[in-house]
Image (cartoon, rainbow, N blue to C red):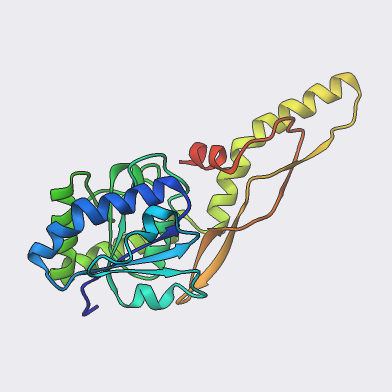
Length: 238
């Protein structure tokens, strides 16, 4: 990679993201720079909260808002960080990093539910000291970075293609669908078709590899009588 840039990307108005990056800048980055003075942080995302905007004046921290393409920022980064300490979201950051072939350092919360193994697919740690040490290790140890990248890329390719995610989502609701159909058959009423707002996963391709991303849209589910938020679906998949 030949760089000492560290990347965080995400929706910057989302409190878990903003809280995590502020923690990283205040508690972790100074420890990294004690060992790697040239290390710099790239914050890439949209709609930054005020606490994120306040970081712009700090040394070796740059904010890139509403960029048309994240690829250039991955290309100049040695490490992707996921310092999420509250809530969880969809964990797309780690999956996206695999597609761009960049190693990841994450908190336990930031990586939970994906099935990744610490030390095999990414580095998972929670204290400022250990998080900083993990980042420095990946900046310096190219062999370690390569092993993590290859394992994570292979894991994502096997488990998070559009087809795999679609299969998991359908599996979650199939029992409810069958139950609803049985119930309506008893009452001789037609099965109504509900629209389920879950922002389904749609595949995209980077460097010839297919994976998924969250996109606005709808999934038709027969016989489902309740609506749930996207986070509920994702947390159950996790």
